Length: 382
Ligand SMILES: *Cc1c(COP(=O)(O)O)cnc(C)c1O
Image (cartoon, rainbow, N blue to C red; front, side, top):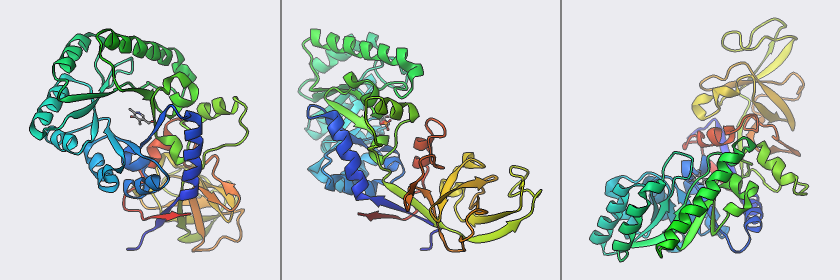
């Protein structure tokens, strides 16, 4: 198959990120590797075997479909937790295969008991609490019913975890909301305890919470974006730096590369690409790269993105097309058709610190990564 770009995944970079995360979490907190969204676009089938090789034994996914893909790779070697969607007819499969799952409403709680009855195995559940994000989770008023149900069916249910998720721990703007969530979680946990019901573990932290609010780490932390080598946002990175760290301990584990497809000269005063998005204010030399928004190179990178060519950082010009984008090579005279273009990652000594896939705007890393199509070939490198 011919592909216009390739993605390389670096084992040594992953090991470095894992060491940083493990060191930060210490020995009391289990590191769960979040691999939802096709392992943030890296590819479950590529990332999970590599993570296993690097000693990872706990994974969180969003759906039962992803859980099946992870289990296919790990077998019983690792724990898998589904944090979101399970179609009702998949609950039995989950219970049968020791796949743990979040429970955030009575319907699923009842489903878990039924699935346990059918399979003869205990359902291993994580009770998710609503603490202020207003996404999924039981609210405080549901507690008496949940507690009674858990006690009544305790031979069919293993109360593995009590958990919640924060509504934007990466941003100081959410400080009061998040600290309120932390307090609420503590209070709810005590309500279980008062009824002599203890979860085996408590877990609440994502990457940003683990960095910014160490008390959220508890027994297990669900780390996504950082293991792939990205900070949740610039604020989180700065908050790490202000603790006296000098270097960036995180390494992007993927390099996404393509090649120059075509080159041309453009005169002062001409527009480049569709419409009037980019006006050449001097004579320019431009290169067309066969990667566009259909390949996951977002249109929001029009006139914004940065890429590397010949070890130089250069800009995306004009609007991104479906199958290509245009970049400036006016100051890279050596550039020729067929030369390598790095869209994410390093080239020579240069890394895209303000990348196309960048810190340009919060959340962009997550969104752009997970849009990387599954059909771009992935190759593991040392
Ligand atoms: C995505 C997600 C995480 C991981 O978030 P990162 O910011 O990528 O570390 C943790 N918990 C839940 C419930 C999530 O949905």
